[in-house]
Length: 210
Image 1 (cartoon, rainbow, N blue to C red):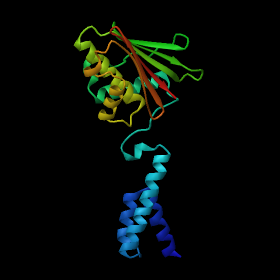
Image 2: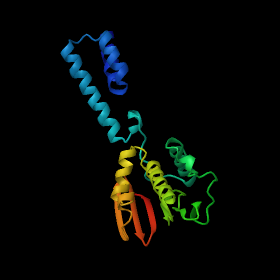
Image 3: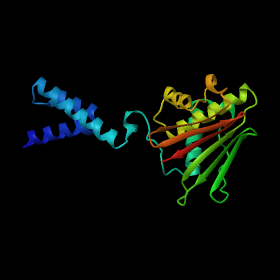
């Protein structure tokens, strides 16, 4: 019976804590080498499948998509963490003061030409965020792109810098296409819709958790 218990424990560790399970298999398995490889591969495949379907990307060094259910203050904290990681805090793009709700709305002004306005639902979670931007020079355009990148990093923390850039390209928000006169574009990433309306140098960037 003890051998069965050891084998069951070894396989359990292979499924839920693969590195430890592999070590135990290497040290104590009574299976032959080929069987060990098959068992380890099957357990790891189950581990990956279970965590991916559960959205548990944190086990792979990432974070879950926020999607629905984020309150304004939680958003502010995560936004500032993203700003620190990307050194956007050096551009004074953090949101240092707590939000004050005006009915169901809250807002923050980064600069006179760059403002954020949010709306909450009946449960107090963000239902929509809008960034109103009217950059007057290259530095202000750079600030806008950084804020938009931080919003994407906050709502889709599993995306790396290249993927965030792809979202901005989908929305025609990068420098090489930002000279278009008027446009509307929309794209989706893991339960979050991003859209932009731009006309005559004024842009409205909208984030909508689905």
